[in-house]
Image (cartoon, rainbow, N blue to C red; front, side, top):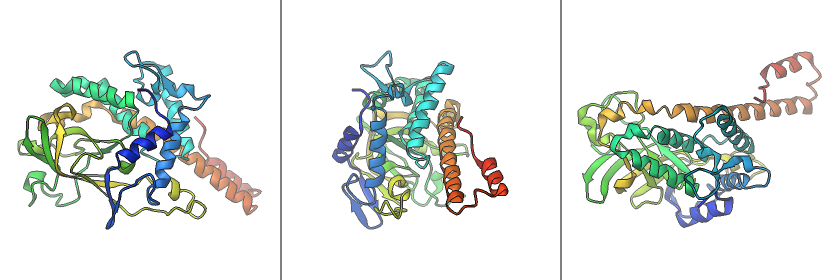
Length: 333
């Protein structure tokens, strides 16, 4: 398979809708429900963007692939590669006015770093490489869940009243790990094909935290996976809520209830020492580049909005307003 378009994305999302809850309501149709349809349509539009005539620079042919894939999966090895990734990030960010922070080029950037540094995962290095190719060649949209729920932060996971408040391993089977607990904050999870799960913590894991020292990937519709989302910011009225009706990515707490993670998707298995060194992957260098480009697009949108507001009320003729507007306007590079 190769880079997909918006119709293919929406078709897969309909067929693999996650178990999603907003308040007491269970949403069974992410594509059609008013709380989620706007952002789903915007993400589909991004997938269409990379397939449009004139945007061939948003695709490339990997040496180990069967056709063109998104530049979001390009591992940069030259200045030209970095410039191509920058241009791709900027086109997608401009398309959403910089308002969507977790479009698919964010976690895919993280996965590019994991693939480039796959040796960090030791015996599971080939699993990481295979998973990267699977995501790339199927053009999947990933979310990520990396933080623990805000319970008693004075105690580590092993000392919580319920040992599976935090996501941990309950059992090892021939098929894979059985995990239970919660992870957060999976932004855009309702629209994602899969979730990349790993521990983001400034504290060091101790030996007794082994069951929680895990990293894996799981489809959002896997049995036992439940997404509990916050209330949406806006409704379906694009006139009164022109931004929130389209760009509300929806954050979610991911609850795992005896979920089976197949061995080929387990990248770190109860290795607290490796988790304590996970920063060596340096994925923030890739995600940071995407975030910087997106924030530039957002600043340009806000600056343009402010300029237009001054024109409407005729204050753009005042020197002090022009000066303030000029000083706050970001450059295009």
